[in-house]
Length: 119
Image 1 (cartoon, rainbow, N blue to C red):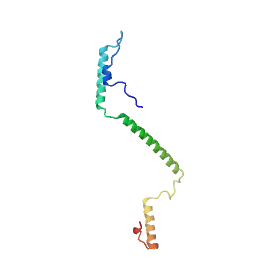
Image 2 (image 1 turned 60 degrees about the vertical axis):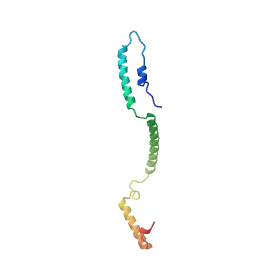
Image 3 (image 1 turned 90 degrees about the vertical axis):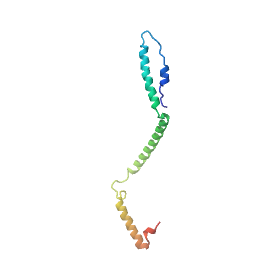
Image 4 (image 1 turned 180 degrees about the vertical axis):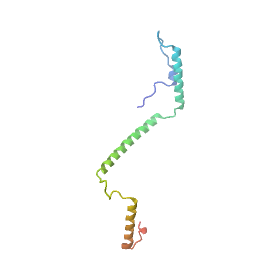
């Protein structure tokens, strides 16, 4: 749960201190509190951030991150046993185009069909 502020500008304005014999100067305390209240008012007036909504989004993103990490680990586990030099695994586009071209030629010659007509 999100921790909330102990004060807002109104509660600081109404705050009263007990007097003590050797305590702080009440005028000095009031001046400092006035500055703090000013800061709070500025923050409150400029704050357009919906903290609960952001915390909810953060929780969702953490769940999604955990799920994606799990999927990544599973995928890494699957590929760790694949050979790294195998020609069957790494085929670039040029090689694929050559293979397709040869297959189209076979279809044309042996089956007497136009490969473009095949759907």
